[in-house]
Amino acid sequence: MLGTWLALLDQPEFRDPARLRELLTALETRERMIEILDQLLAERGPGVAFGDEIGEPALRHCALVIAPYGEAGAPAGVVCVLGPSRMDYARVIPLVDFFSQMVTERLCA
Image (cartoon, rainbow, N blue to C red; front, top):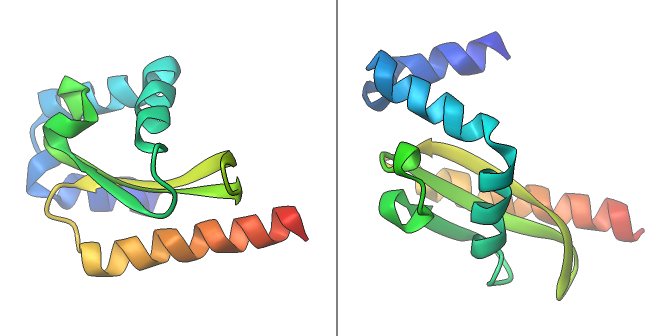
């Protein structure tokens, strides 16, 4: 887990302590994050939301890659990656989709 946070701090978008503080505060606000994820669940399959599309000022320099898991039409939850808006989408989107499929298979087996 520490390695994940250190990798985050290496990203230019998160080197500013004030920006990082805003991001961590937004992530701690569970209700707001649930609202954001609910909005993004409108489509089945992996989806991407960038900065201002997310609707949370603290996440304006970020992107979310999200995929629901569970039964079609009634997702049980989401697999989500939050990262800088310049993340490697060609790698992240298939990984998020794969993990959501694996979780769905385990739940529905």
